[in-house]
Image (cartoon, rainbow, N blue to C red; front, side, top):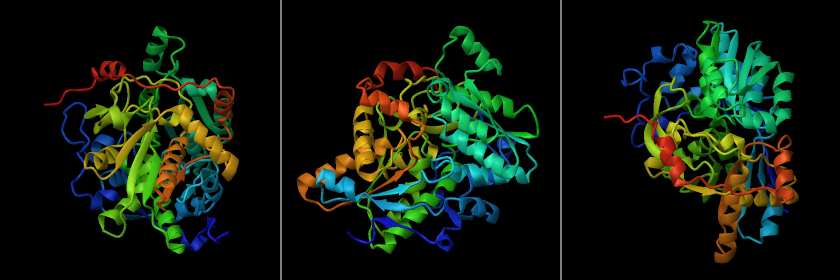
Length: 453
């Protein structure tokens, strides 16, 4: 067996800068708009939610941004993360393809989310913020922010989508261990939450609703701010340490990807892996096919419209141009709870609109079947979210088996599924069902999307 089944970087090889893809795009992304004036949002418009440093990063066109030393010190608890070649999965599939996966489940929270939680908390701490509010779907982001707040001494209050809150109680326990205060969303804490519960006491919730609740609480005090785990430019910026490390690791063994696949919900995992490779593609140094993979139950890129829409259900956030299913969209309670957001990150939407990346949607059963193959060969039980990328990698590897092509396939295994075993239990018992979002449901949710002149 070759020496590069597991490819590691030394601690002193860890990248010390994040990469901002905006600097290299052939066209600038559309600006965010103030919800009242519909004019491009200014730094002042974000001041009630984010610290100055994050606002600057959100609007930056600078190619590289230095990672603060205090952030690097926390990163070193788990970074650099390993890159594996999935040799046993390749053997099972009988494919000539080489499958590589960047494993982000080694973080304390078990996912890629601390890559942005740590700097977000750090910058808030510098400005004297005492508490952060946030939303979470499956729970990876909420637990990551609670972990990061514990590192820098901030309070953390979290609204978790009710369907996930009920289905994944141990995620809530993890948040609470790190000091987080967790509410199901919709909750009776906020006026908006109470209004929804009055109509439906068993409301399943959505990320858009949870964002509305967290934002409404964040603006009540100068010592409270809001943190978002995906979608925004600065979040994707922080995640690019994934792709930067992967580039260095593949270079160590003389490989470049022919196909890069990443699961896409809000876009941070995908952008974190893909954007450094997109930079190299735009520079002519490599030419991978870069493919977003999303659930058929929440097909934002493949069925959503590229429109200006709110990031939350109540319409409190700036308008962002993104592929959206409509901010009032209530997703089915699928097991990949982190891939149920109504919109796609504006930067991912923009590069998709420019034709620089592709997108496909895959149903749950195929994803979990691929995940079981992966677990039985590679040993890691994946979180439900990256099962979509695994399924796409398996599809590509089987095409290589038919054609005889020796492609290099790269993906990011963005988290482990140790707290998602109820989902696997349903799959193993044959109780899981495929869900596909209908055109009628999309049309209904799109009725509430603003129509701009």
